[in-house]
Length: 364
Image (cartoon, one colour):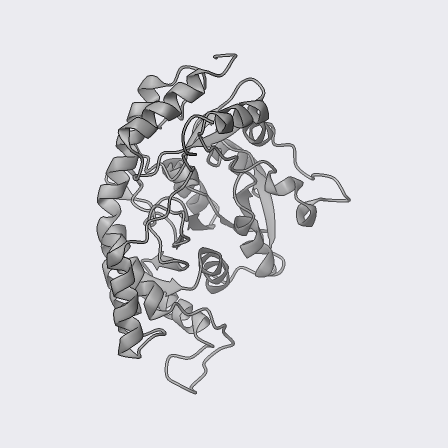
């Protein structure tokens, strides 16, 4: 191995995060208190002032958004198969059925033409995923949904700060969902956020996360216990302040890799898109698994997100077989490889990543 392994992700937990957690622990207000309210208010600035509802995970955010919009048994939601399983799980947990549509070759996000072809009388919503930090083609998906009377739920779990033109992700749909898992562009150890322009929907979400209560023991509906802790919120507030700088560093790192890498297809960026590079995902046109192993021998960590599309996972098979033909999804799953791009990389580490990739045989 050439030097210490450069990890694909390197979560930041610094002294400021530790101090914030200790401060909250000493306060005794540790669940759904003032830190959560402040985190929601501060995150709102990232999404043009929309209402923000903090929950305990990104998956919970997706689940509650689907439920709050009234999507349930008998409904279908169009989702990409090239995503983490939580995208489809949230639909199934609400009693609705995910319908898988293919992706664009460039952005790895939903293909509007494939979505249009998947709409049926049972379709209630479209759930585009801003995958790897690249915005989905919302300029096409939002009007398509409006023409058919469908809700749009953005899965923005990997796209904190991404945008199309001057419009940030998290502001296109009836609701949008972010994750604060430790490997994301910012984190709160664990947590999620739902954003919406609809005050009534925001209130429903707040009820659903807290046993259906706004006032203690005054339950208005059947809800869950999906609250965010104040410890997590305090850490999230520290991270949120650093997010712009971290995203800028990710973009600078990606620009360097774009210019240096010749032995893989670097990630394209759509016109007017602000990519925040949660992952820097290349395509390997030869043997991807052999390339991953070769990079590891050179001390470069690389990961495959996602080796098995959701429609090929056991819970979503139809009669024991995949129920959808998704050629671009299958092609991506066989070719993608995510390289280190996180803001903690040094100049020497970036050079090692580029050199290691360029050492691979079979340049495109």
